[in-house]
Amino acid sequence: TSPLVISIDGTFASGKGTLGKQLAAHYGLAYLDTGKLYRAVAKAVLDAGGDPDDADDSEAAVKHIDTNALSDPILKSGPIGAAASKVAVHPGVRAALFDFQRDFAANPPNGAKGAVLDGRDIGTVICPDATVKFYIDATADERARRRHAELTGYGEDITLETVSAQLAERDARDSGRETAPLKPAPDAHLIDTTGLSIAEVLGRAARLVDAVL
Ligand code: C5P
Image (cartoon, rainbow, N blue to C red; front, side):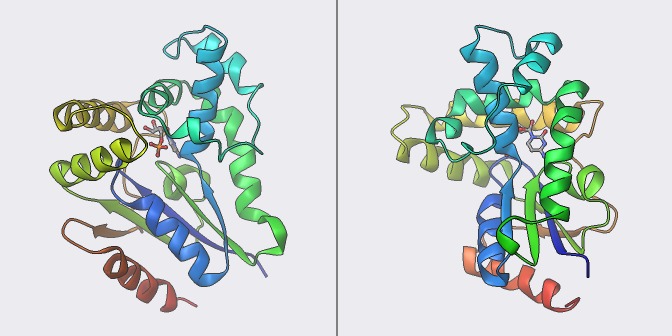
C-alpha cells in the first residue's frame, strides 16, 4: 500500500509548520519542513562567502548541505530565511533537492506509514499525488505579528514594521518566481488561519484527513 502523504503549502508565517507537526503527531506520520532544505542551502552559500542571488554559488552549495542537521537552530533566523527565498529561485537548486523530498514522501523514515511535507510547492510539484493537500494562509498583519513574536522569542532584535516589510518582499518573491511559484494546487483544501487557534486549525484539517482515510 502506498504511504499516506499530506502536503501543506502556504505563505510565510501562515501556520503551516505548526499544522504540519501536529498532523504528523496526530496520525503517526514522519514530518519534513522542506523550507529547512532551502535554509540549509542558504547557510552553506553564506558560509562560503557566496551570493544567494547567484545561481552558480547556490548550486555549488547544495552539495554541501547536511540533511541530518536540519534541526540546527541557526536555520530559523530571519537573515537565513530571506537568503533561502533567494536560493529557492534557482531551478538548479530546486532540481537538486527534488529527489530527497520525493524519497521522504515515498519511503517515510523510521517505518512511518506516511509523511507530512510542508513548503511552497509540495502539492503542485513535489507530491502532486498527495492523499490530502492543504493550502494555508492568513492576513499579512496576522502573519507579521506571529513572525515578530517568534523572532523576538529567539532573541532577535527586530521591529514589527521590519518584519512586515520582509514578509511583503518574501511573498512577492515566492509567488512571482518562474520555477515552482507558490500557489494552491487545484485540489488543495484552503484554510485561512486568521483568528483561528492552533486547535481550531488542527480540528478543521483533521476532519478533512479523516474523511479520506
Ligand atoms: O518556510 P520557510 O520560511 O522556512 O522557507 C524559506 C524559503 O524557502 C521560502 O521563502 C521559499 O522561498 C523557499 N521554499 C521553497 N519551496 C519549499 C519550501 C521553501 O521555495 N518547498
